[in-house]
Length: 329
Ligand code: TYM
Image (cartoon, rainbow, N blue to C red; front, side, top):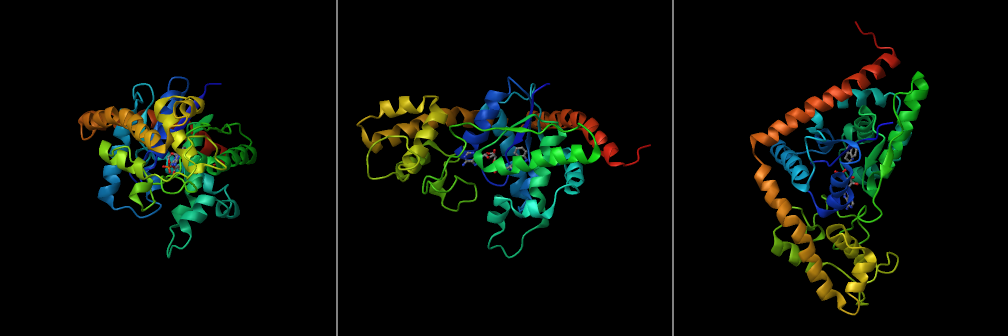
C-alpha cells in the first residue's frame, strides 16, 4: 500500500522551535519517502477567537515557513484547510460516529476549556475535525509531537468505527510518527510544561523568527539546575535534558556526542553554543521566509496545493457519503 502522510501546524500563534522539533523538521525529512500533504489547519485555529487580520498574517507565515524549512511544494501539496471544503464536510460526517464521552476525555480540550467563561462548541469537536483531516487523504502515517497522540488515537478509533458501521474498508487506521528526540520540547522557563504558543512568558519560547540576539538572551536565561553537568536524564535533570534535545534537533549530533563535547565545561559555554547552533539553522530559514512571504508565487503554491488536495479528497468523501446512504444523482 502506498504510504501517505497528512500533517500540519495550526496558525493560532507564531511558530516556535517546539513545533519545529516535533513537526516541521520531521516533515522535511519524511517528504522523500511518503506521498505527503502538508496543510495549514486554519479552521482549527478559530476554535478559539482569532482577530481576522492576525489569522490572515499567521496563515501566510506558516505557509512561507513550510517552504523556508525545506518542503518542496512540487512534490508535496501545501494548502489551506479552509480552501478544501471536504475537510469540514467529512468532519461533520464523523461527528455522527464520535460520541460525547470520548471527546470530553480529550486532555487538550480539558486544558483549553478550563477556567474559560465561554468555550466554543467547535473546541469540543476539534479532534473530530482533526480525524477528518487525516482520514480524508486515507493517510497511513501522521508525524506529530507527543501532545497530539491522544487525538490520533481518536482518529484511529473513528476510522475503525466508520468502516465497521458502514461495512467498508475505506479508512486505514493512521499510525503516528513521533521522533524520540524533539517530540516534546518544553518551555525554557519550566521543563514541566510544553513549549507553547499560548504561554504568556516570552522567555519560555524561542520563536522561529526571533533575531539572533534575542535567541542568545533567551537561552542565557533558560533555567537549568545547580549540578553544573551537561547530562541527559529526564527524571533528575529535566531542564538540561530539554536543552540537550533542542541541541540535537538543531545540530544533528547525538545526545552522547553532545554530553561528551561539554564534559566538565558547565552550563555557560553549553548554553552559548546551543544558541549559536539554533541561530545557524534559523538565520538561513528566516532569509528564505523573507524571500517568499507576500509574493504571488506563495499564493500560487497554495492555490495549486488546494487543487491537488481537493482532487485527492473528492473520491474519498464521495465513497464515505455513499457508504452512509446519501443519494447521489
Ligand atoms: P499544533 O499547531 O499545536 O502543533 C503543530 C505540531 O507541532 C507539535 N508541537 C510540538 N512538538 C514538540 N514540542 C513542542 N513543544 C510542540 N508544540 C507543538 C505538535 O505536536 C504538532 O504535531 N491539532 C494539531 C493540528 C492539526 C493536525 C491535524 C496535525 C490539525 N489537524 C492533522 C496533524 C494532522 C495542533 O494543534 O498542532
